[in-house]
Amino acid sequence: MRRFILLLPALLMAAPALGEPLKVAKGMWSVTSDIYMSAVIDGSPVDIPSEHSTIEECWSTDQDVTIDEGIASYLGECTTGQSWAQGHSFDIDLYCDFDGIPMSGSAEFAVSKGGGSFSGRIFLSGGADGADMTAEALMIGHTTGTCAGPN
Image 1 (spheres, rainbow, N blue to C red):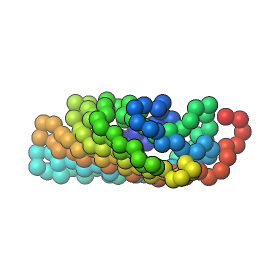
Image 2: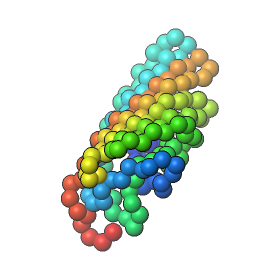
Image 3: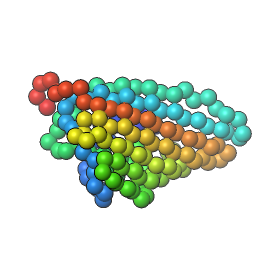
Image 4: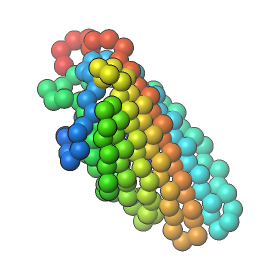
């Protein structure tokens, strides 16, 4: 899941896929991410510290910046199931395999009118060989102005 935080900007620039993508405004963005993981191995809970990060980055490209089914490819070995897009929100079922640990769940995103802010939640659960795991990522982002310099 740590890879997810590092790939968040690429995730939001994924090419449009089957559903109607959510468009996000171009410009300078501030995005905070929190990841919470828990595991129970052979009946014993394992302490996994949460992770928090903030990214300040310019999202100004020749393409539209979108949220759509393409997010699955940025999470690793994940595929998509059913997706729903309505107005300013997008939900999708996810099926993943992280180093031999199958996990499934969903991703939910909402974008403000005009695309100047968004929120997202990804929840996955699964396990293998006596280990049960859950992972939840929460993201909140908003534009902070225009990008400095050429992009």
